[in-house]
Length: 467
Picture 1: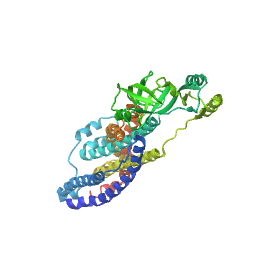
Picture 2: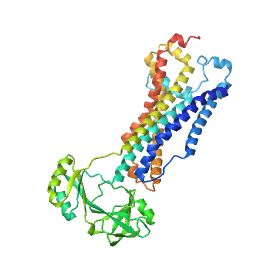
Picture 3: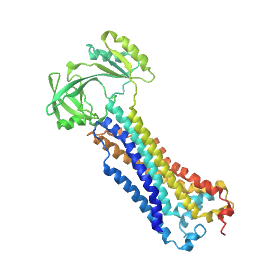
Picture 4: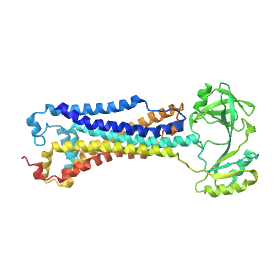
């Protein structure tokens, strides 16, 4: 009997494992492509042993689960097997029933609240299913939000308007003119030039900044933003290539000028770039100005007016568009789809456990109906039996999902030799965490609706047909 039931479970599980690993590898392709694009890593592939381990692991879990359940069924006495649903089960959870009876709730709700303590193994299965669903939803939402923030940090530009062009105008004069215009909140000038350094065979970009750029999309991993000429910040690739770290001094050559820079911070940057004050290399000037506008200012009208004001100096302004990488949209869509599938699996787990439980206690259900329990009260009893477990699963699943996000996202960045600042990981606000925790009871409710409807529609005569 045990072998028959295990084989019965493994046959569909084998088909599901094959379909799952194929779908999983296809889903992983755009995720890996996005990782390569954002972090600058290369040749990111799926190791063959991951596919084998995933399939074998799923089949092992199914086999062990089926074996445990089949072993219990195989050891069940024939008379007990025939009497399932009609013979009172061993008295468990009596203390919970007595405590629930004292709660200021209706009797059906009290019976439902006490029910999880009568079947602790099934209750644990429901708890694990809901926890997995809540963790999956939390992880997926956090992953998508982190990827969006990382993309913004990679672009290093959140300005509303950009003024650019070849001009010999003094950057300080341009910035003063911009600051004097209505609607300007902040602005800075920026330019980039190739530079070399000892130990590096290829040139790297050095970026000089005129004005305060701390409001823009530059995310600091450690240290601070530069505050004076001679100070600089650099990304992890540059620090690793030169063997330097925050606090060290490096010498670079930019435009024929040798400059000593003190690294005061590590900025999140996917290239070997160095950022410093415009006063460090004054000959470079500024060929682009980034502007942040006050709330309510029309970016298009502002850019048009700014272009008119600087037309004689060869500078043109245009509003910045918030472009999202299409590949990132695909990754988020796939992540959302996978999350919905995992939530559906969790709800099906709740449904399965409830159907087993209701089938086993169909005698009790008939007695309740004979004593006057209405269909609505029956539904309330069934829903109450999983509501508390669902809430506990949500409270457990949310920290698990947050932990997964804080492990997986930095690991993706580490594949490109980057370090992530905490601001790119801190995407969960209090309101979102509460909503995700309440997703646990929602998953349990979805899984309980069908069994509750069946229990409500079951006629008393059918439930007690063997009496």
